[in-house]
Image (tube, rainbow, N blue to C red):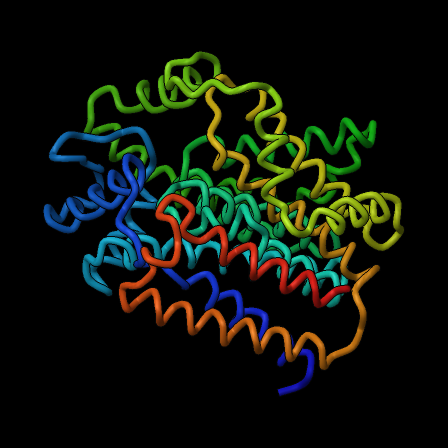
Length: 391
């Protein structure tokens, strides 16, 4: 294996070992984790994979992708409350890392891709919430795939970018509903506003086949569910989307600056690279187009949810992999090029992750971590260690 491949293998092994650490070390949190895991369990018990049910009652608040993934995990690994319920979230996080790495390598180069992936996978926000059973991780994967497809379309046409674009939209919509298409649309709109032209839309190629792919993947479930459950479309579209956005029906109001605090804390310990990478890469001839697009999409997501009357910390997860491209560019500009340092550091981190995973699986995690911040200390240590390698 070449040195470049070894570096990437070491990074993903380190991320996987650290993210899997403590996965089953605590019980499911209520209400969300317990609710979503129970819906998946009832899908398995009843054999009805169409209509989500909670305690036998139809539950139409979210599309089924998370329930399907969790039910498959239960089927394959058994119904261990923590481990098998949370594994799809870790898998979605690692898949997002892979899509991020692929996009960054194509557009920004290998060094920027490496540090973007490391920063995203180890920042405090992602490392902590990737261990929680929520729909936002799959939505983030869908938005990241959609962005990757559009960046791929910058330098090639054909079916590839269109098929990937349709798949990304479908994942986002099946994860959390219309927001899977709204966020990319808002991102493109803000790109055009910042550029004061429609030039950013040039990379949106093959819209018709992309929409065809998305519809083929999404519409069957929505059509069948609307036929099976009376009033489903009204409840899901109007109550769960428009009313939650425009009113306080969900009782989740926060200050307008709420997500600014989440971003500031969540990017620990990579703040400097996000800032310098975004600032210095904005007008760079090589990185500018991709970084401007990524930061516009990130800003669109944060602004959209800041205007919303319903706010939860997990809502802005889709902004993080896009902002990670700025962190990657900052790493490309400021990280050293020595190979021995990262090999030793990542080797140490992998060993630490494996050791902590073993301790956690043995049932000692509750003695090590406070239940409600179970993975935050490990995430901090992991991120700080990676950041230290760049000094």
